[in-house]
Image 1: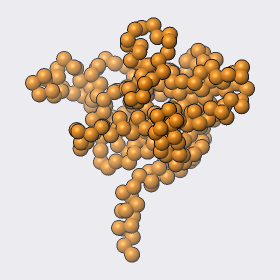
Image 2: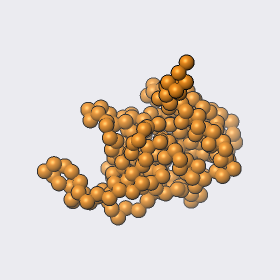
Image 3: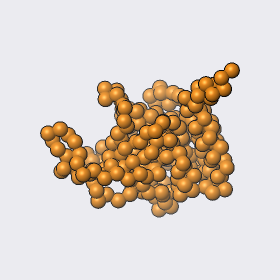
Image 4: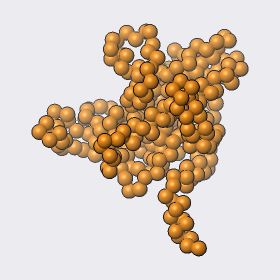
Length: 267
């Protein structure tokens, strides 16, 4: 029996990363307070008939926040997030699913923006070497599935939350990867229109990124109180998925905290 060949076969899958991350989360629980709720949790989104399995589901120590983690193992690769605003500061906002039950009815059962730590760069474009330019970008495909899974599990828990007299539950989507995360900053005015290439680009490795864009083709539920015109309509259709380097996951979990002021509209 060729043990090395068998080991290589095992390591071609993503399961070792998933198992290793689960062990790391449990070992560092005293640092961040997150616990593992489910592994390989099946889900089905009744709103669009998507279905699948999410790798890891976590819950914070206050039983208010749920984090859905999809693991992505890659070899010797960098994911490059584009930032065409060199002056842009790290962002604190992120789109999350909010379930709020009080006075025997659901006050909120929808996606909403929250301010939360840790801050990070935010981008809607990611470049990965070797991708087929004719197919849907890999990160968009994975992130869209995470968004659908987040929505599905939130709705799955809805009846349970209705049994609690006063319930608040927040759901966040995360992709954890072995890829190095690089932010490419450049000035859009310097993109050469002759060949569509950037010049004078600067690169910085970061531990986590907010990947934010319209990740679902299903029509969004647009709030009636959008007051800033079409731009508000567009933002209402966006979603946020955090992308975290695997080695930085304990740091990300330790710093993860929703701003109390951001929760006031839901209380």
